[in-house]
Length: 247
Image (cartoon, rainbow, N blue to C red):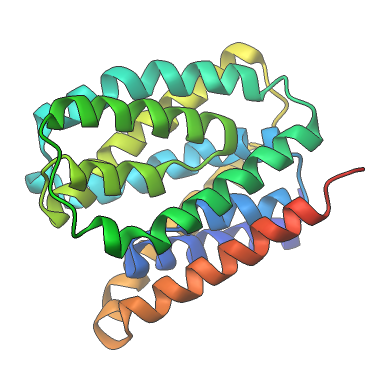
C-alpha cells in the first residue's frame, strides 16, 4: 500500500472524526461513502469496521459516566446478532447491489436528520426498552449492510428517554458493539478486505485525531453549520453513488 494511499486514509479519518465530534453525525458514513468511490462496498465496510470500533470506543470511554447501561444492554441484545448476520450477507452481495445499499442508507440517514427537528418535538416512547431493542436491530442491519448505523442509533436512543448527553454516550458504546460484531461477521465470511495493519492504523489514527481536533473547533464554529455541511456532502455523495451504478 502506497504512502499516498495511507496519507489519504489518515486525512479521511481526520475529516470523519472532526465532523462526528462537531456535528454529532455523519462522520462514519462520510468516510464509508468516500472510500466506496474507490473500493467495493463490502471491502469498505470490512476495512473501516476496526477503525470505527476504536473511534466509537474512545468516545464512549470519554463519556462513560453518561452511559445508560440498562438501555445499552437492551440495544446490544439485538444489535450484535443483527450486525453479524448482516455482515455475512454483505460479504456475498454483488458490488453494484452493495453500492446501491450504501447509497440508500446514506440518503435515508440524510432524510432522517432533516426531519429530526420535528421528531424532537414528539413525546418520548412509552416503552423505552422496546425502542432501544428496535434501535439495536435497525442500527445493526444498517451498519452490517452499509457500514453506518450511528445516524439511527443515537436519535432513537434519545427518543427512548435518554438525555442528549446520555444518547451520545450510549450511542457511541452501542456502535462500538455493532462494529465489533461486524468484524466477527466479516471474519466468518472470509470477506475480501484491504484492511492491512497500516490501512487500519491510518484510519484509526485519523479518527482519534479528528475527535481531538473537533472539540476545540466546536467552541468556535457553529454546530448547525457543520451539520448542514455534513448533510449536504452525504446527500451529494449518496446521489453520486446511485448515479454511477452499473446499468
